[in-house]
Length: 186
Image: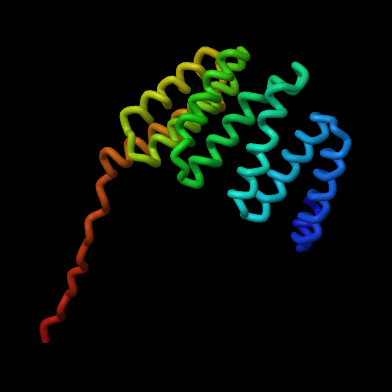
């Protein structure tokens, strides 16, 4: 990351490729998963979401089969993949986010489920599926309220409901006012 911030993106790509090659050579899935996550971050910082999606997709199956410590991040990895797919406009994004929600429920991770519900609402909203998006934001709000999570409540309200309301009934635009010119009588 320091290489990117100092204006050396090619060196950052070369370094992360070397780390990935070493992790693959070691045969340790934990190292490989970490290298792929690092590669994802590098590509996102460089503004290459397709390459980041490719790296994340490569690392996610490893995350889901590792030790229980890493397994807990499986739903999060699925959500990141789905969110990136939605950002890129990929058709499978909604199915991927629904899978992330199922995984979060299976892993008993309501915090991940909350984030995945919000992300799915955003993806549905981008496709103009307003009713479904509203339902997802409502579900996220219920999860946040149940967990007494103020940040989650704020996220569900601000990210979703405001956007749904704006698309359904845009706020009235300010009226154009005309200035009266006072003419002096001569």
